[in-house]
Image 1 (spheres, helix red, strand yellow):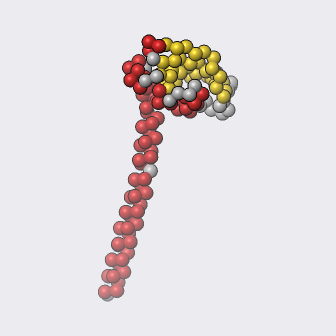
Image 2 (image 1 turned 180 degrees about the horizontal axis):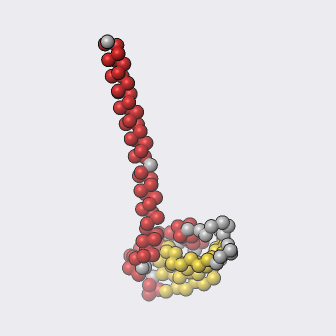
Length: 131
């Protein structure tokens, strides 16, 4: 994925910079999180303070125009950014955390089941010996 800065506008009253990028990519359009990471590394900013506002694509062309805001402070990010845009970025993080938490739980259940099965088998063996 290649990023090219088309515009950069500094807005000190809102404690942010607004960037317009042209993104070249192969295959499907990159996700917001992928773009956010690439933009943060390109402009040397914290990815937690970077918000992808819009992704404009055209059919059949592997390029997109991306508008992003890079804030200087977390409080200003929460204060000025729209709740819907923040929800799009936060939802992905929550899903990842839930997936990570959900993966170990089934493994533990399987271990418990195997322990219970082992206990049942040992009980059955002892009963057979008694008979």
